[in-house]
Structures are given as C-alpha cells and as structure tokens.
Image (cartoon, rainbow, N blue to C red; front, top):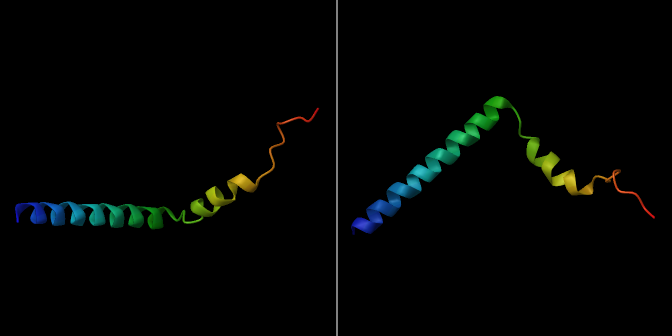
Length: 51
C-alpha cells in the first residue's frame, strides 16, 4: 500500500512540474518553438558542396 501512495505522490509532482513549465512557456509566449524545430530537417544545407 505504501508503494501506491509513493507512486501517486511522484505522479502528482510530475504533473505539477509539467503544468509549471507549460505556464512558463505560455508566459514567455514561445509556443512556435516546436514548429521551428519540426521544420528544421526540411531546411536546405547550403554548407555542403557537390563534387
């Protein structure tokens, strides 16, 4: 029974930390950062030269 209480406590702490970080992200107004990271592999790499 003690393990279930410990697991519930750790789960609640993880949820609290996630909400805290989500609120911080919204406060900084940077939700488009994930979009930029998702499009990063689509950019052309101009530093490579072809032989």
